[in-house]
Length: 293
Figure 1 (cartoon, helix red, strand yellow):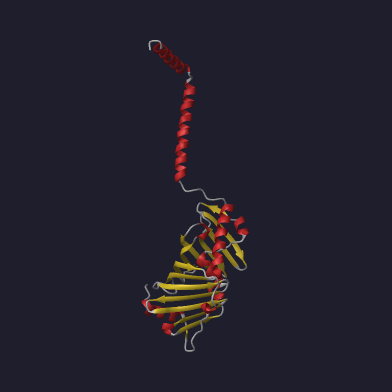
Figure 2 (cartoon, helix red, strand yellow):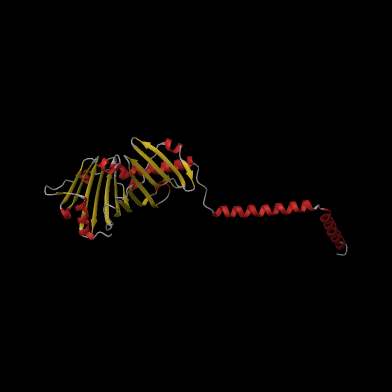
């Protein structure tokens, strides 16, 4: 031990001497490097907690297209259950109703609205023709130019795509898409229609707007169920640009039969049905549950 003590003391003296000979600039450099290392570590930890940066547009397009194609395949034959609330300048705020919808792409839709006392309205769309029956008032409606009435081409197909967010923009729209912090914005035209769509970071539509002949319709998606390509909308809002009517749908169930059934879309107005007007609709709905203004 007496031999080792002088050696340890000698090593300590040499270390202290080396430190005294180290230039002050080198010591400052070492301290700066240490500070940079600590800052980099903190930045890494903060970045791990922050939201991810938007995906590249190519990756976003791939995710959006894969999800839209999967949802569009369900439109060949689809049954849906939803709760629907209606308000707007044309109707006021109406009571919530249970809705069952059946679709067969591209041009057939059947919608039945029910409330506590039974069937409130039965609506069938085939191509550009709408037939509606409201049994409580013995009221019927027949429209031969639904596309012009709504301001959108292919009304049945539009409703189906809106219901499932099965929108498939052309590839040219993705080439000109603009990325933002929430995902991306796309715009394109089709015939006499102008379209705009916002997608989120997962490539799912946040809102879709179509304009035609000075009128517009917007579909907004507030909530989704599931993840990835299997996701489908849980909450949907449809609104015209003038604020006349707004529909808010909460989708409760979706089923995809192998094929549509012919009787799904068979609706014939009784001979004693009275012509339906907007005032008649408001009066019948008022008796059914009251218009809340």
